[in-house]
Amino acid sequence: MIIVLKPEPDPDQLSNLMEWLKSLNLKINVSEGENSTILGLIGDTSVVDIELLRALDIVDAVKRVQEPYKNANRKFHPDDTVFTVRGVPIGNGTFNVIAGPCSIETEEQICAVAAAVKASGATLLRGGAFKPRTSPYAFQGLRQNGLKLLLEARDRTNLPVVTEIMDLSHIPLFEDVDVIQIGARNMQNFELLKEIGHLHKPVLLKRGLANSLKELLMSVEYIMSGGNDKIILCERGIRTFETATRNTLDLSAVPVLKKLTHLPVFIDPSHATGIAALVPPMAVAAAACGADGLMIEVHNDPPHALCDGAQSLTPEAFDGVMRAIEKVRPFAVRYDHGTPVMP
Image (cartoon, helix red, strand yellow):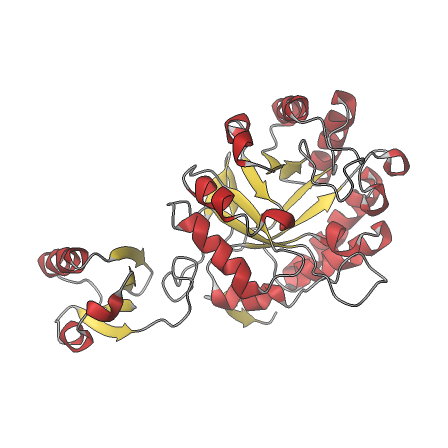
């Protein structure tokens, strides 16, 4: 249920209303927009007398929300969520590119790639220390040593770092990581999501390879229910009958998610296509349709990469993508409270 207040509500009446709602064991999410204030009620709202609410002087409208995700729902939070990661703004019309290797291999490799992607305009650095692999015999990452090398690259470039967590037991190791990534395979690891929700650290949550957007938002709800609202949604392709690409990139997720939620939406064209030559056109398309950012894999020697070399761009190719995006961005679709605005 949401309560839309009239402009400049009386403070005493608002305080009394809040106390009454809390006495009904309801959680209240307050969203102050440019034109109105919205109270989002979470809990058993059947105990609330809607007609009584509507009769209050400070109340403009009362509406029931049918969707099971409340905190992530744009109806509860009309304005886009905006937050910063080590000074880098995320959301609200900004465009960010997270770039770096799939796996951290050596100090020389991660630091060289970090310097290259920063020079091309990347705003965050990615690198895998713990790697979820289909085969138990594939390279699993450098683990703790990989995290140390990633932080070393951050110290040299001042790029905030993004890396994937695999297990609850790893949480203490991620204390100095700027953005914790929840991968596609862990999108419905609800115990992990609940614990991450208590960290109050920015999170990048990837859509599962066979999950709906509603299921993605319900996973978001697990994180937000713990108090963490600094969440980036990432579309990384879904599994379909098509075999020409690694996955099928669902770019329609951008306008759909923009309508449903206030959270920023990124696109990962590397995992979606699995083919380096397809990453540039999909990256440009993602920028054109109004995504808030991209996540792109870059390796200084893709043929010899220990993980996902086939989908990794060279630093030179990545620079070309960034130049193309610069040309497209002025003509990209914008969103006004979830409504697409054509250029």
